Amino acid sequence: MTLMNCLILAFLLFGIGVWGLIHRRHLVGMLISMELMLNAANINFIAFAYFTPGDSTSGSIFSAFVIAVTACEMAIALAIIVSMYRRHKSLDIDQLRELHD
Image 1 (cartoon, rainbow, N blue to C red):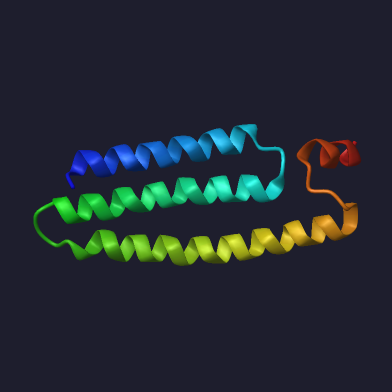
Image 2: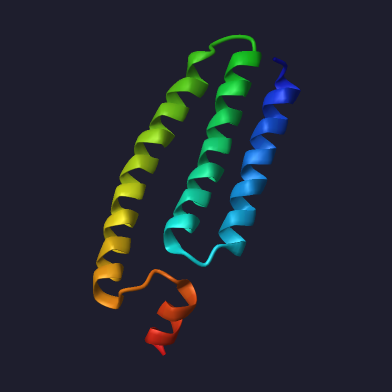
């Protein structure tokens, strides 16, 4: 596998994540799309660390840090989503906007 293959894979994952974030109306789907985008960034970190001469552990360490922060972020986001569902009985973005007005 070459660096270009890794970059193409990361670009496709990031593009799918952006598409899902724009076109999804359900909060859980939007959260999954954001996770795809962050995983694409992690693929880039690891690919550049692997294919760059010298210290190759820095990309892996940074990627592990991003994964840990993302896990905390997703746990908080899921707790907020569960709370919104219990209160409004819906996770549709359009319906939640109508409740706000």
